[in-house]
Image (tube, rainbow, N blue to C red; front, side, top):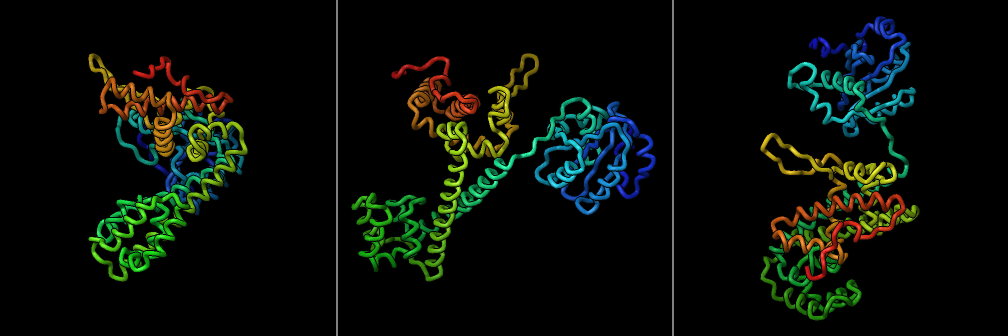
Length: 421
Protein backbone atom coordinates (compact mmCIF):
# COMPACT_ATOMS: atom_id res chain seq x y z
CA UNK A 1 0.00 0.00 0.00
CA UNK A 2 1.53 3.27 -1.14
CA UNK A 3 0.97 6.08 1.32
CA UNK A 4 1.02 8.51 -1.63
CA UNK A 5 -2.54 7.36 -2.29
CA UNK A 6 -3.54 9.62 0.59
CA UNK A 7 -1.88 12.73 -0.84
CA UNK A 8 -4.75 14.92 -2.02
CA UNK A 9 -4.55 17.52 -4.78
CA UNK A 10 -6.85 20.51 -4.69
CA UNK A 11 -9.64 20.27 -7.25
CA UNK A 12 -8.40 23.42 -9.04
CA UNK A 13 -4.86 22.05 -9.34
CA UNK A 14 -5.73 18.61 -10.71
CA UNK A 15 -4.53 17.81 -14.24
CA UNK A 16 -7.99 16.85 -15.44
CA UNK A 17 -6.80 16.17 -19.01
CA UNK A 18 -4.63 13.32 -17.76
CA UNK A 19 -7.46 12.02 -15.57
CA UNK A 20 -9.86 12.01 -18.54
CA UNK A 21 -7.37 10.19 -20.79
CA UNK A 22 -6.48 7.55 -18.21
CA UNK A 23 -10.09 6.74 -17.26
CA UNK A 24 -11.68 6.56 -20.72
CA UNK A 25 -13.93 3.51 -21.04
CA UNK A 26 -13.45 2.40 -17.42
CA UNK A 27 -16.00 1.71 -14.67
CA UNK A 28 -15.29 4.18 -11.88
CA UNK A 29 -16.47 5.13 -8.44
CA UNK A 30 -16.08 8.55 -6.89
CA UNK A 31 -15.67 7.75 -3.18
CA UNK A 32 -16.27 10.79 -0.99
CA UNK A 33 -15.43 11.39 2.66
CA UNK A 34 -18.06 13.90 3.74
CA UNK A 35 -17.19 16.77 6.08
CA UNK A 36 -18.69 20.11 7.03
CA UNK A 37 -16.46 22.12 4.72
CA UNK A 38 -13.35 20.39 3.33
CA UNK A 39 -14.37 17.29 1.36
CA UNK A 40 -12.04 14.55 0.13
CA UNK A 41 -12.66 12.13 -2.73
CA UNK A 42 -10.87 9.43 -4.70
CA UNK A 43 -11.52 8.20 -8.23
CA UNK A 44 -11.05 4.42 -8.40
CA UNK A 45 -11.81 1.73 -10.99
CA UNK A 46 -13.15 -1.80 -10.45
CA UNK A 47 -9.60 -3.16 -10.11
CA UNK A 48 -8.97 -0.72 -7.23
CA UNK A 49 -6.64 1.33 -9.43
CA UNK A 50 -6.48 4.88 -8.09
CA UNK A 51 -6.59 7.75 -10.59
CA UNK A 52 -7.21 10.74 -8.38
CA UNK A 53 -7.26 11.89 -4.77
CA UNK A 54 -8.66 15.39 -4.50
CA UNK A 55 -10.09 17.84 -2.00
CA UNK A 56 -12.29 20.90 -2.24
CA UNK A 57 -14.25 23.31 -0.05
CA UNK A 58 -17.98 22.71 0.05
CA UNK A 59 -20.19 24.37 -1.10
CA UNK A 60 -18.07 27.06 -2.77
CA UNK A 61 -15.96 24.74 -4.96
CA UNK A 62 -18.47 21.92 -5.44
CA UNK A 63 -19.70 23.31 -8.82
CA UNK A 64 -16.11 23.13 -10.10
CA UNK A 65 -15.88 19.45 -9.18
CA UNK A 66 -19.20 18.70 -10.89
CA UNK A 67 -18.03 20.49 -14.04
CA UNK A 68 -14.90 18.36 -14.25
CA UNK A 69 -16.78 15.13 -13.55
CA UNK A 70 -19.13 15.90 -16.45
CA UNK A 71 -16.11 15.96 -18.77
CA UNK A 72 -15.06 12.38 -17.93
CA UNK A 73 -15.43 9.80 -20.72
CA UNK A 74 -15.57 6.76 -18.45
CA UNK A 75 -17.86 3.81 -19.18
CA UNK A 76 -19.70 4.31 -15.90
CA UNK A 77 -19.32 6.58 -12.89
CA UNK A 78 -21.00 5.82 -9.54
CA UNK A 79 -20.71 7.71 -6.26
CA UNK A 80 -20.15 6.24 -2.78
CA UNK A 81 -20.15 8.05 0.54
CA UNK A 82 -20.84 7.52 4.23
CA UNK A 83 -24.27 8.40 5.66
CA UNK A 84 -22.70 11.12 7.81
CA UNK A 85 -25.32 13.37 9.38
CA UNK A 86 -26.64 16.07 7.05
CA UNK A 87 -23.38 17.46 5.69
CA UNK A 88 -23.53 15.32 2.55
CA UNK A 89 -27.17 16.01 1.70
CA UNK A 90 -26.68 18.98 -0.62
CA UNK A 91 -23.68 17.38 -2.33
CA UNK A 92 -25.62 14.15 -2.88
CA UNK A 93 -28.55 16.13 -4.28
CA UNK A 94 -26.34 17.94 -6.79
CA UNK A 95 -24.73 14.66 -7.86
CA UNK A 96 -28.18 13.14 -8.36
CA UNK A 97 -29.27 16.12 -10.48
CA UNK A 98 -26.13 15.57 -12.57
CA UNK A 99 -27.25 11.97 -13.19
CA UNK A 100 -24.95 10.02 -10.85
CA UNK A 101 -26.25 7.19 -8.68
CA UNK A 102 -25.15 7.35 -5.06
CA UNK A 103 -24.39 4.42 -2.76
CA UNK A 104 -23.78 4.46 0.96
CA UNK A 105 -21.00 2.66 2.82
CA UNK A 106 -21.39 2.14 6.57
CA UNK A 107 -19.12 4.33 8.67
CA UNK A 108 -18.54 1.32 10.94
CA UNK A 109 -17.22 -0.70 8.00
CA UNK A 110 -14.84 2.14 7.13
CA UNK A 111 -13.59 2.29 10.72
CA UNK A 112 -13.14 -1.49 10.90
CA UNK A 113 -11.18 -1.50 7.62
CA UNK A 114 -8.61 1.11 8.64
CA UNK A 115 -5.79 -1.47 9.11
CA UNK A 116 -6.72 -3.90 6.35
CA UNK A 117 -4.88 -2.35 3.39
CA UNK A 118 -1.89 -0.61 4.95
CA UNK A 119 -1.58 -2.14 8.44
CA UNK A 120 -1.71 1.33 10.03
CA UNK A 121 -4.47 2.00 12.61
CA UNK A 122 -4.78 5.68 11.73
CA UNK A 123 -7.82 7.10 9.98
CA UNK A 124 -8.01 10.51 8.32
CA UNK A 125 -10.08 12.12 5.59
CA UNK A 126 -8.14 11.06 2.48
CA UNK A 127 -7.67 7.53 3.81
CA UNK A 128 -11.37 7.29 4.63
CA UNK A 129 -12.22 8.20 1.03
CA UNK A 130 -9.84 5.50 -0.22
CA UNK A 131 -11.43 2.91 2.09
CA UNK A 132 -14.92 3.87 0.93
CA UNK A 133 -13.81 3.22 -2.65
CA UNK A 134 -12.32 -0.19 -1.80
CA UNK A 135 -15.39 -1.19 0.19
CA UNK A 136 -17.66 -0.13 -2.66
CA UNK A 137 -15.90 -2.45 -5.08
CA UNK A 138 -16.00 -5.19 -2.43
CA UNK A 139 -19.79 -5.17 -2.83
CA UNK A 140 -20.78 -3.96 0.64
CA UNK A 141 -22.30 -0.64 -0.47
CA UNK A 142 -26.05 -0.13 -0.72
CA UNK A 143 -27.98 2.14 -3.08
CA UNK A 144 -28.91 5.38 -1.35
CA UNK A 145 -32.65 5.53 -0.76
CA UNK A 146 -33.89 9.09 -0.54
CA UNK A 147 -36.62 9.92 1.94
CA UNK A 148 -40.10 10.24 0.52
CA UNK A 149 -42.19 13.37 1.01
CA UNK A 150 -44.20 11.51 3.66
CA UNK A 151 -41.05 10.49 5.55
CA UNK A 152 -39.70 14.03 5.45
CA UNK A 153 -42.99 15.42 6.74
CA UNK A 154 -43.08 12.87 9.56
CA UNK A 155 -39.44 13.56 10.40
CA UNK A 156 -40.10 17.29 10.66
CA UNK A 157 -43.11 16.70 12.90
CA UNK A 158 -41.12 14.30 15.09
CA UNK A 159 -38.32 16.87 15.36
CA UNK A 160 -40.86 19.50 16.38
CA UNK A 161 -42.26 17.18 19.02
CA UNK A 162 -38.79 16.38 20.38
CA UNK A 163 -37.94 20.10 20.44
CA UNK A 164 -40.94 20.98 22.60
CA UNK A 165 -40.66 17.81 24.68
CA UNK A 166 -37.05 18.63 25.58
CA UNK A 167 -38.01 22.23 26.37
CA UNK A 168 -40.88 20.99 28.54
CA UNK A 169 -38.61 18.59 30.43
CA UNK A 170 -35.98 21.22 31.18
CA UNK A 171 -38.54 23.73 32.44
CA UNK A 172 -40.28 21.08 34.53
CA UNK A 173 -36.97 20.36 36.27
CA UNK A 174 -36.44 24.08 36.89
CA UNK A 175 -39.96 24.35 38.26
CA UNK A 176 -39.47 21.47 40.68
CA UNK A 177 -36.42 23.17 42.17
CA UNK A 178 -38.23 26.48 42.54
CA UNK A 179 -41.32 24.91 44.11
CA UNK A 180 -39.26 22.97 46.64
CA UNK A 181 -37.87 26.29 47.78
CA UNK A 182 -40.91 28.56 47.60
CA UNK A 183 -44.03 26.36 47.52
CA UNK A 184 -43.31 22.76 48.65
CA UNK A 185 -46.90 22.08 49.70
CA UNK A 186 -48.27 22.28 46.15
CA UNK A 187 -46.37 19.14 45.09
CA UNK A 188 -48.26 17.16 47.75
CA UNK A 189 -51.52 17.71 45.86
CA UNK A 190 -50.53 18.36 42.23
CA UNK A 191 -48.05 16.61 39.93
CA UNK A 192 -45.41 18.64 38.11
CA UNK A 193 -47.10 17.97 34.77
CA UNK A 194 -50.54 18.94 36.09
CA UNK A 195 -52.48 21.36 33.88
CA UNK A 196 -54.09 22.79 36.99
CA UNK A 197 -50.65 23.63 38.35
CA UNK A 198 -49.82 25.44 35.10
CA UNK A 199 -52.88 27.67 35.44
CA UNK A 200 -52.20 28.41 39.13
CA UNK A 201 -48.62 29.38 38.35
CA UNK A 202 -49.61 31.62 35.45
CA UNK A 203 -52.34 33.32 37.50
CA UNK A 204 -50.62 33.62 40.89
CA UNK A 205 -46.97 32.51 40.74
CA UNK A 206 -46.58 32.04 44.50
CA UNK A 207 -48.60 30.68 47.47
CA UNK A 208 -49.06 34.09 49.09
CA UNK A 209 -50.80 35.51 46.01
CA UNK A 210 -53.06 32.46 45.81
CA UNK A 211 -53.93 32.67 49.51
CA UNK A 212 -55.09 36.28 49.07
CA UNK A 213 -57.54 35.15 46.38
CA UNK A 214 -58.50 31.70 47.67
CA UNK A 215 -62.16 31.74 46.58
CA UNK A 216 -61.32 32.57 42.97
CA UNK A 217 -58.42 30.08 43.05
CA UNK A 218 -60.74 27.27 44.18
CA UNK A 219 -63.15 28.08 41.35
CA UNK A 220 -60.27 28.11 38.86
CA UNK A 221 -59.05 24.68 40.02
CA UNK A 222 -62.52 23.15 39.67
CA UNK A 223 -62.94 24.65 36.20
CA UNK A 224 -59.50 23.68 34.84
CA UNK A 225 -59.72 20.13 36.19
CA UNK A 226 -63.30 19.79 34.83
CA UNK A 227 -64.41 18.82 38.34
CA UNK A 228 -61.99 15.87 38.51
CA UNK A 229 -59.76 17.35 41.21
CA UNK A 230 -61.02 16.12 44.59
CA UNK A 231 -62.43 18.77 46.90
CA UNK A 232 -60.11 17.54 49.66
CA UNK A 233 -57.11 18.31 47.45
CA UNK A 234 -58.43 21.77 46.65
CA UNK A 235 -58.94 22.60 50.32
CA UNK A 236 -55.59 21.06 51.25
CA UNK A 237 -53.84 23.14 48.61
CA UNK A 238 -55.53 26.32 49.81
CA UNK A 239 -54.61 25.56 53.42
CA UNK A 240 -51.04 24.76 52.40
CA UNK A 241 -50.80 28.08 50.56
CA UNK A 242 -52.00 30.04 53.59
CA UNK A 243 -49.49 28.31 55.87
CA UNK A 244 -46.65 27.60 53.46
CA UNK A 245 -43.25 26.93 54.98
CA UNK A 246 -41.54 27.93 51.76
CA UNK A 247 -39.35 31.00 51.41
CA UNK A 248 -41.54 33.93 50.39
CA UNK A 249 -40.88 35.04 46.81
CA UNK A 250 -39.59 38.44 45.92
CA UNK A 251 -41.45 39.95 42.96
CA UNK A 252 -38.97 38.76 40.29
CA UNK A 253 -39.03 35.22 41.67
CA UNK A 254 -42.82 35.22 41.43
CA UNK A 255 -42.64 36.43 37.84
CA UNK A 256 -40.11 33.70 37.06
CA UNK A 257 -42.52 31.07 38.38
CA UNK A 258 -45.28 32.58 36.25
CA UNK A 259 -43.00 32.46 33.21
CA UNK A 260 -42.19 28.81 33.86
CA UNK A 261 -45.92 28.07 33.95
CA UNK A 262 -46.43 29.87 30.64
CA UNK A 263 -43.52 28.01 29.01
CA UNK A 264 -44.82 24.65 30.23
CA UNK A 265 -48.24 25.40 28.84
CA UNK A 266 -46.84 26.55 25.51
CA UNK A 267 -44.67 23.43 25.10
CA UNK A 268 -47.52 21.13 26.11
CA UNK A 269 -49.92 22.68 23.60
CA UNK A 270 -47.32 22.46 20.83
CA UNK A 271 -46.80 18.77 21.59
CA UNK A 272 -50.55 18.20 21.56
CA UNK A 273 -50.88 19.91 18.17
CA UNK A 274 -48.05 17.83 16.68
CA UNK A 275 -49.63 14.63 17.98
CA UNK A 276 -52.90 15.54 16.23
CA UNK A 277 -51.08 16.15 12.95
CA UNK A 278 -49.26 12.83 13.24
CA UNK A 279 -52.50 11.03 13.98
CA UNK A 280 -54.12 12.45 10.83
CA UNK A 281 -51.19 11.39 8.63
CA UNK A 282 -51.04 7.89 10.08
CA UNK A 283 -54.81 7.31 10.01
CA UNK A 284 -54.74 7.91 6.25
CA UNK A 285 -52.84 4.61 5.80
CA UNK A 286 -54.58 1.45 7.06
CA UNK A 287 -51.37 -0.50 7.72
CA UNK A 288 -49.80 2.38 9.61
CA UNK A 289 -53.04 2.81 11.51
CA UNK A 290 -52.76 -0.83 12.60
CA UNK A 291 -49.20 -0.20 13.84
CA UNK A 292 -50.37 2.91 15.66
CA UNK A 293 -52.96 0.83 17.52
CA UNK A 294 -50.08 -1.24 18.95
CA UNK A 295 -47.37 1.33 19.73
CA UNK A 296 -49.14 4.68 19.34
CA UNK A 297 -48.93 7.35 16.62
CA UNK A 298 -45.75 8.96 17.93
CA UNK A 299 -43.70 5.74 17.94
CA UNK A 300 -45.10 4.81 14.53
CA UNK A 301 -44.05 8.21 13.20
CA UNK A 302 -40.58 7.80 14.74
CA UNK A 303 -40.19 4.46 12.94
CA UNK A 304 -41.19 5.80 9.55
CA UNK A 305 -39.25 9.04 9.84
CA UNK A 306 -36.10 6.99 10.58
CA UNK A 307 -36.61 4.87 7.44
CA UNK A 308 -38.01 1.93 9.36
CA UNK A 309 -41.17 1.31 7.38
CA UNK A 310 -41.67 -2.47 7.78
CA UNK A 311 -42.95 -2.70 4.21
CA UNK A 312 -39.44 -1.90 2.96
CA UNK A 313 -37.83 -4.88 4.76
CA UNK A 314 -37.77 -8.44 3.48
CA UNK A 315 -38.23 -10.20 6.83
CA UNK A 316 -38.78 -9.54 10.53
CA UNK A 317 -35.15 -10.22 11.45
CA UNK A 318 -33.87 -7.57 9.04
CA UNK A 319 -36.39 -5.10 10.44
CA UNK A 320 -35.23 -5.79 13.99
CA UNK A 321 -31.63 -5.39 12.87
CA UNK A 322 -32.48 -2.02 11.34
CA UNK A 323 -33.49 -0.85 14.82
CA UNK A 324 -30.17 -1.99 16.29
CA UNK A 325 -31.92 -4.66 18.36
CA UNK A 326 -29.99 -7.61 16.95
CA UNK A 327 -27.43 -9.30 19.21
CA UNK A 328 -23.64 -9.43 19.05
CA UNK A 329 -21.22 -11.77 20.76
CA UNK A 330 -17.50 -11.63 21.49
CA UNK A 331 -16.14 -15.06 22.41
CA UNK A 332 -12.77 -16.74 22.06
CA UNK A 333 -11.69 -20.22 23.12
CA UNK A 334 -13.11 -20.97 26.54
CA UNK A 335 -14.21 -17.38 27.03
CA UNK A 336 -17.87 -16.89 26.20
CA UNK A 337 -18.85 -13.26 25.97
CA UNK A 338 -22.21 -11.90 26.98
CA UNK A 339 -24.78 -11.27 24.28
CA UNK A 340 -25.41 -7.56 23.83
CA UNK A 341 -27.43 -5.32 21.53
CA UNK A 342 -25.51 -3.91 18.59
CA UNK A 343 -27.37 -0.57 18.90
CA UNK A 344 -26.49 0.19 15.27
CA UNK A 345 -29.91 1.60 14.44
CA UNK A 346 -31.34 5.01 15.44
CA UNK A 347 -31.38 5.44 19.22
CA UNK A 348 -34.49 7.60 18.98
CA UNK A 349 -36.48 4.59 17.76
CA UNK A 350 -35.27 2.33 20.57
CA UNK A 351 -36.19 5.04 23.09
CA UNK A 352 -39.80 5.21 21.94
CA UNK A 353 -40.07 1.44 21.49
CA UNK A 354 -38.95 1.11 25.11
CA UNK A 355 -41.81 3.36 26.23
CA UNK A 356 -44.22 1.31 24.10
CA UNK A 357 -43.14 -1.87 25.87
CA UNK A 358 -43.67 -0.27 29.26
CA UNK A 359 -47.23 0.61 28.21
CA UNK A 360 -47.82 -2.96 27.01
CA UNK A 361 -46.54 -4.34 30.32
CA UNK A 362 -49.02 -2.11 32.14
CA UNK A 363 -52.05 -2.67 29.92
CA UNK A 364 -51.71 -5.98 28.06
CA UNK A 365 -52.47 -8.93 30.42
CA UNK A 366 -50.53 -11.47 28.33
CA UNK A 367 -47.36 -9.35 28.13
CA UNK A 368 -47.74 -8.41 31.79
CA UNK A 369 -48.07 -12.06 32.84
CA UNK A 370 -44.95 -13.11 30.90
CA UNK A 371 -42.90 -10.22 32.28
CA UNK A 372 -43.99 -10.77 35.89
CA UNK A 373 -43.29 -14.51 35.65
CA UNK A 374 -39.74 -13.80 34.43
CA UNK A 375 -39.12 -11.25 37.18
CA UNK A 376 -40.41 -13.61 39.88
CA UNK A 377 -38.30 -16.48 38.56
CA UNK A 378 -35.04 -14.56 38.10
CA UNK A 379 -35.16 -11.57 40.46
CA UNK A 380 -35.70 -7.85 40.16
CA UNK A 381 -32.12 -7.13 39.11
CA UNK A 382 -32.76 -8.46 35.60
CA UNK A 383 -35.88 -6.40 34.91
CA UNK A 384 -34.30 -4.35 32.12
CA UNK A 385 -33.18 -7.54 30.36
CA UNK A 386 -36.77 -8.72 30.04
CA UNK A 387 -37.91 -5.31 28.81
CA UNK A 388 -35.25 -5.51 26.08
CA UNK A 389 -36.37 -9.05 25.24
CA UNK A 390 -39.90 -7.74 24.78
CA UNK A 391 -38.59 -4.91 22.59
CA UNK A 392 -36.97 -7.48 20.31
CA UNK A 393 -40.21 -9.46 20.13
CA UNK A 394 -42.27 -6.34 19.47
CA UNK A 395 -39.94 -5.25 16.65
CA UNK A 396 -40.62 -8.52 14.82
CA UNK A 397 -44.33 -8.26 15.56
CA UNK A 398 -44.46 -4.78 14.02
CA UNK A 399 -43.01 -6.16 10.78
CA UNK A 400 -45.90 -8.60 10.55
CA UNK A 401 -48.44 -5.89 11.44
CA UNK A 402 -46.96 -3.69 8.72
CA UNK A 403 -47.58 -6.53 6.27
CA UNK A 404 -51.25 -6.82 7.11
CA UNK A 405 -51.40 -9.22 10.07
CA UNK A 406 -53.38 -8.39 13.19
CA UNK A 407 -51.39 -7.92 16.38
CA UNK A 408 -51.79 -10.81 18.83
CA UNK A 409 -49.67 -10.69 21.99
CA UNK A 410 -49.98 -14.47 22.35
CA UNK A 411 -47.76 -14.91 19.27
CA UNK A 412 -44.89 -13.12 21.01
CA UNK A 413 -44.21 -16.15 23.21
CA UNK A 414 -43.71 -19.81 22.36
CA UNK A 415 -44.99 -20.91 25.77
CA UNK A 416 -47.62 -18.94 27.65
CA UNK A 417 -47.10 -18.71 31.42
CA UNK A 418 -50.12 -19.69 33.42
CA UNK A 419 -52.11 -17.09 35.34
CA UNK A 420 -50.68 -18.26 38.65
CA UNK A 421 -47.09 -18.51 37.39
